[in-house]
Image 1: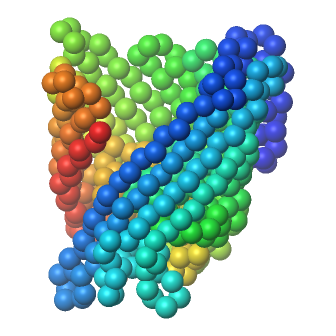
Image 2: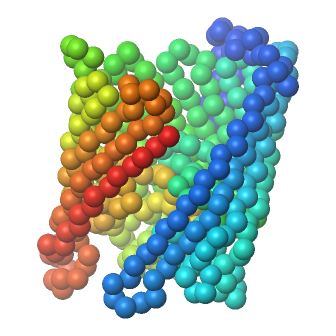
Length: 393
């Protein structure tokens, strides 16, 4: 059904291009409009297991290159995008690799981590007016399929996507992907994805108010919907108050629920967050609340071929919620609060540099550890807390 809707969306977009402003007419050309970006990152993560188990750590140097051509001139412009990634392991041997949450270098069958990783991909693209159709290896970044770029190398997906901006303020997107490449492994299908389709869009009603709706369908795994509403209230003296609501609704496939939850009827989750950010000059203060309800916690990311096949495969960053940091506070029935502070150093002559720190506390987690009658909801007083700091350039 979702694939049929995507087809109708593409047909409607193409039929509308005659009446809209045409960006393709402004094409500079295949070479003239191209650009190359190379990012180098050095990362080290160590996990200290307090229970006496062997500590884990990985250290590596990574490089990610992205070449995006311009579009040829004419009614239909064509182009090519190329992705190249390489990482070398600087530490993480002698049994120190393989920890969940690090994932720099995936261990082989022998249990050893590779000394380096190299992978690449390419996609062809076509543009009519303000609509771009692309097929090949991509890094999708939509709320229901958000590739993970938080380690040395990035996840990539192979498939088809379409993005249209034919109407001012409205952006429509659709996609269908059949392969996923893990961020810490070589090969274009190392994640063993079956397929995922998504459809959605965002609309800017005014300069202050915007909203977004997306839906995805992963065969034999789950269906997911996402909603966002964002409102910015301008205040005197270069101040503003931003309200941001995000929510996901997920329904697991029965067989997947049986596999992961031990109960084919434990299929539903709803999770939402509401954040308020007061910005004044280069500073910002954030207060946010997040709440999870349903039969399970909120599930996302991972890979279909991980332990017991319990991974989702819809991207390691598919959790656009206020309280998602290293810990996501997305357990069953979990409630969390955040207090955060941020500073933008562009006002001090360092554009692009930001620093954020947050304190988040979660409570009311249902971890199933309390034995109760089937008709009574099991709840514990479990809680988690988290302090986070981010420095970004």
